[in-house]
Length: 75
Image 1: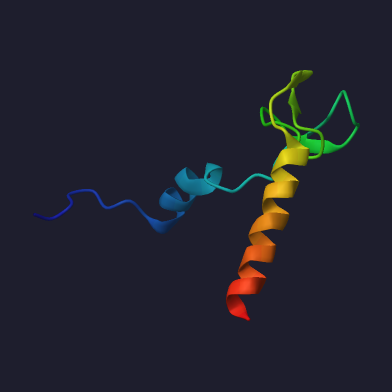
Image 2: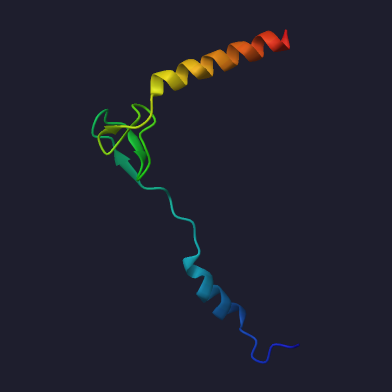
């Protein structure tokens, strides 16, 4: 099957001009003042809309334990 009316390069590129990537928008955390991506919990204090969502200290401890475990397995 052949396309009856082929669209030109310029028409195709005009249509695709809105497909560009946009830089992420940042908000400032109300609790700690750090920048974070909108509609996502703050990674430095673990709050979202001034409510505690993530336990950042617990996550850091878990990460340290994993790193120590990997070091002992490698040796």
